[in-house]
Length: 402
Image (cartoon, rainbow, N blue to C red; front, side):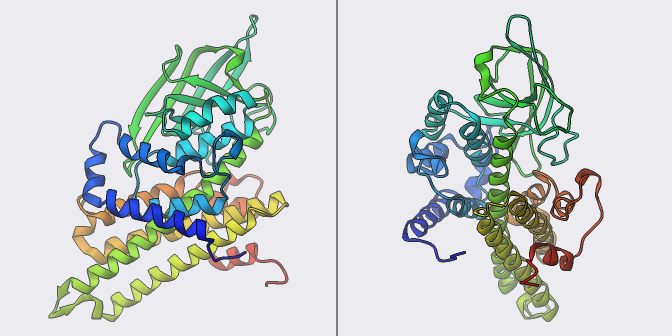
């Protein structure tokens, strides 16, 4: 993989970084957090105006047909600044699912409105029992005598579900709860009769919702794409979301290391600055090692996107998610330890970085789940044992590289 950014990618990264530095200082983030919606509509309109909402969508719907690298560049800068806008839930998860599964008419009706900042979408797919398994769906879509669909079931931790205008809901038309076939997508307005939505804030300040369908009846026109054929579109959207949060975690870890380094250089104790103490230098060095290892795993995952072998591609994504998730928890916790009591304060950035890294570790399957999927465990949800880094390295390297 070529690690040198193109001129366009450098401009994109610099534009996102400049916006975050100028408009997303930590005190401004705290102000946005206190708003009822938990994000800034003004910033969201700015992202739309600059074209960031459509960076990974095709040109035929008004997007920029950018690569996964372009998306990772945006998410890494968002991770440094702890951006609160529903970019992941709307512009990545929901938009990619609609783009991959929807008909031409649906794509042209929904995606341009989303890219212009006029429509907020959220993908309601994961359930409490799925534990990261994308094809596990128990929500049912039953055809009625008049040709409509009756939805019944629940969805858990719907990212952006509390602020979305419309929901893209997965439901099983046929098959068992763990079958890959039979999963359909439906576009449902948030005020639909029979939809019960409970919104809440996640520990990192994000917006999410729990959904329950009680007698929710929808027309056949609500079906996104073909009935029972949505699993590939959902998997593609989740894969892109995994790459996105891995990049976001790398940005957040980089910020933790930078803030902690600067704090140790200025905080004085025992007649000297803390940065002169060798034990603390070693801790900071360990944090830097985990950061660079995570960055390398992100690069490897981005390189694997072009691999035509689906199993090898998914294994590389799982390896990155598993290792970056654990490294993020380590770097975040060490940052708090090195700051001492101030690190626990909600008025200081380190606590917010740690919370975001902790949430990223469990999104779309935690590290144990992805270690298991990477190693080929058929029942990944049941596997909870730890795997050493040596095993990870052996699993992701080819025989020639070993």
